[in-house]
Amino acid sequence: LGTAFSISSSGTETVLHSFGKYGSGDGANPVSALHDLAGTLYGTTTYGGKYGVGTVYAIPPSGLEHVIWSFKGGPKDGALPAAGVINIAGSDGTLYGTTENGGVDGAGTVYAVSTSGAEHVVYSFQGGKNGKYPVAEVINVNGTFYGTTAAGGMNGKGTVFAVSSSSRETVLHSFGSSSTDGAGPQSRLLNVNGILYGTTVHGGTGTSCPGDRCGTVFSISP
Image 1: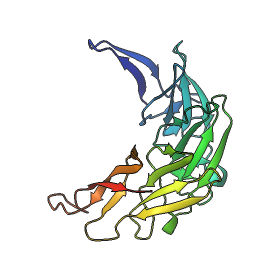
Image 2 (image 1 turned 90 degrees about the vertical axis):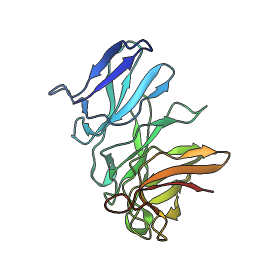
Image 3 (image 1 turned 180 degrees about the vertical axis):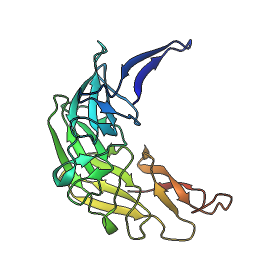
Image 4 (image 1 turned 30 degrees about the vertical axis):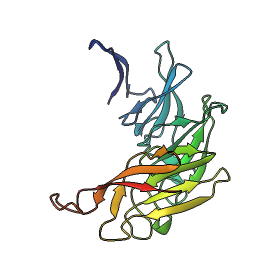
C-alpha cells in the first residue's frame, strides 16, 4: 500500500515507512509529494486512516510515522486527498491542502490542519460553474490560495481558482472556453513574477492523441 523512502546520490535507498498496517488506522496509497517543515516530513495518503478516505501524516527525523489527521468525508470534511500539503513561510506551522472529494457538495475542499492535528475546512467546492475535484496542491501568493480543479467551471472542463483568507472563492478561468483552450488541469500552479503557469491534461490544438487533444501549458494573470 505504498512507502515513503529516501535515496542517496550514490543510489542507496532506505524505506522510511510502509503504509497500511492492518488495524492501525494508518494511511494507504500516498501519491503526493512530501513537504519538509523544520526537519519533519508531511504528506497525504489518498486512502486509509480511521475512515478509509485518506490521511495527513508526519515522519519526524526519528523516522516513526504517525497520522495527524484522518479525513472523515461527508458534508463536513474532505475525502481522498491527491495533493500534498504546503506551509506558509512565517506562519504558525499550519499546513494547507486540497481533497478531491468530500465537503458540502462532495466536490472537494481546501483544508487547513495544524501539525498537532487540528483540522478545519477552509472552503468546500460547489461543483458546476464553481469548479470541482481539485487534485493538485494550492499555492499561496500574498495571503491568497490559488489552484486548479480538474472538472467543473462554465464548460465542465476545469478551473483556475482563488480562495481568499476569508474563505471566498473566485473562478479566474474556466477551461474549454475555446477550441484551442486546455481542459482538465491536474498540476500545481507555479508563480513567476506574479504570473501563474500550469498544465492541462487535455485540450489545445495537438491532434495526435486519442480523446480530447493532447494538453497545454498555460499562463494566467491573477
